[in-house]
Length: 360
Image (cartoon, rainbow, N blue to C red):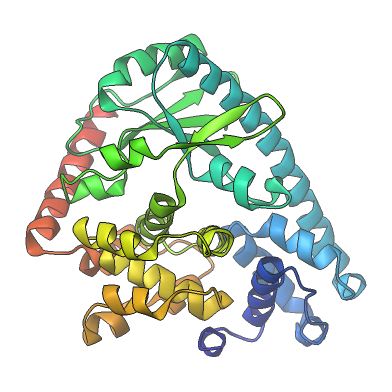
């Protein structure tokens, strides 16, 4: 594996955990004995930063190596996993309440990221951590949606925002600290282009219903649009290149590869000028987890030689914590196609910073 060479000795265990979960195979018993006692704390920090603690507990606790792992590490891993499950149950409860209220008000919406990906692609679904509920609505329904959230005791600190420079507004609940809802009308691509992504007609026309229980469903993205969205999210989200986002993408591609209209996906990505983030994300997923990506797809999206080798995915993914935000933005900058869009992204960031200071 190309990816293996860039990981340190103990990060080899991280890689094995990822592959074990993705492939539903046992962790190799030869790796754990090589981990030094002093390294387990760093491993826990790494797993926590990349939001892999529940997956690690699921994989390791069922392996033959579990008894040889230090007790402090095992207890911390178990506690973190159980706390995540409790939070997920509470978030799903609020998701159902908000979804029901939006349906009753006849406000179009669909769920993205955490709960949608977890419920469809993770087994069991509580292995995918998330700390908020991301709901996409048409921008012209924003006022009505705010009123509904306010009635449910959710409020936002943001007073100033514009459709041109923001893609979402964050809502919290004072009665339940830590329970948050992000009301979105567009993806992060709105920072540099006016070309619609999540708000486009073709995306809304192909929204599908995902069954969550015997009598309940949630609207979610079609795989053809979910994959480009996850690719873009993987590289442009802050913090960028988290390994649990990599797992999201890997599972979605794996579970849909036989039915995906790859040619149509490539044409849509090229039209939206998302070739660079989609190429890098799919390539990294293939190199790390052996995800089956048609070579023709990568060839069609492949950027120039310099750009292919410039993006430091592997080094970024090996970090234990956040990098300076300015550095992260510098790294992301080349992934934006065209100088017009690059210039607009700078303007957007300045506008976002200015409006954020007005809210303080």
